[in-house]
Length: 186
View 1 (cartoon, helix red, strand yellow):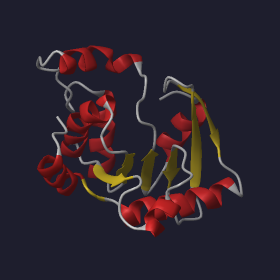
View 2 (cartoon, rainbow, N blue to C red; view 1 turned 30 degrees about the vertical axis):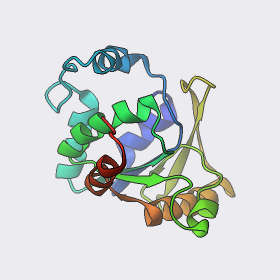
View 3 (cartoon, helix red, strand yellow; view 1 turned 90 degrees about the vertical axis):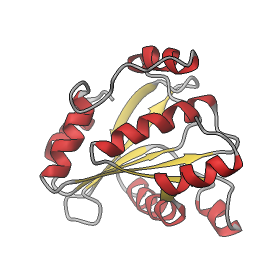
View 4 (cartoon, rainbow, N blue to C red; view 1 turned 135 degrees about the horizontal axis):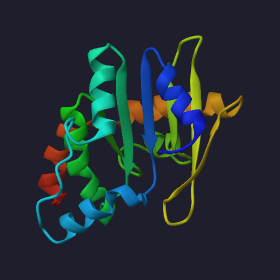
């Protein structure tokens, strides 16, 4: 992640930092070594609170009573990147981040309508007077190109999208258990 607004929000949030992820793949240079190892079936470099600044931050937030959660919207069949990402989510969950998954196009017609138009964002202190959302922009390859603070009506749209994504999502453990019955995700 980059951008002054994200840094400021992460340093100042008091209750919750919620992430909505929607792309089939992200292009972060920091993941290149881990993705290559995963593709080759090798052990991935360790990612834990001991080795990852992000996971240390997640664990510290959770220990201080600040919620960290992400809802990942996926398509079936899962993209290669999403299959890789599932193992990373297990590492994030071990640090205390709540991970939920929703299948775009799955479920009811209402679920499909609720999640039809989505974009990535971080939502900080949702439902409080300090509520803020940071909209994320990506290039066609999935590399982060910008972040800006949402104002109305985008903030209202973030509230609506978060509520819909959360409503239709399941805990990662439930998703992985059911996905393995249908197709391998790892």
